[in-house]
Image (cartoon, rainbow, N blue to C red; front, side, top):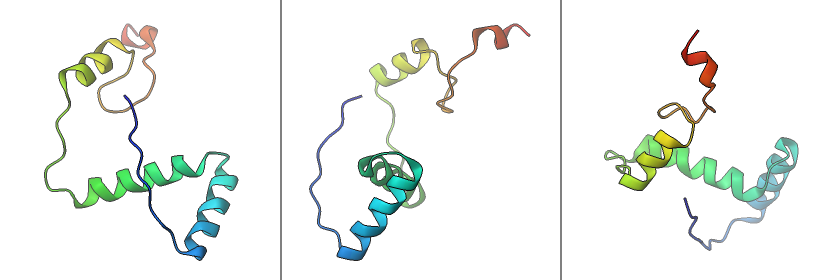
Length: 79
């Protein structure tokens, strides 16, 4: 899935804290922001966006369990 750009301004303290969190977690600042936005949207959006056919097909064929994002272990299915 492609990402879309969003330009925003942060308060100096927010930027400093974001840098520190990203460094501690060894991820990019963009990753921290995307995760925070996802958590906020999930908590506040009364109507979650539906998946497109392409997204659903990719999940089905892409080797992931539905909705968990955990890589599918094909041997686990037959245990």
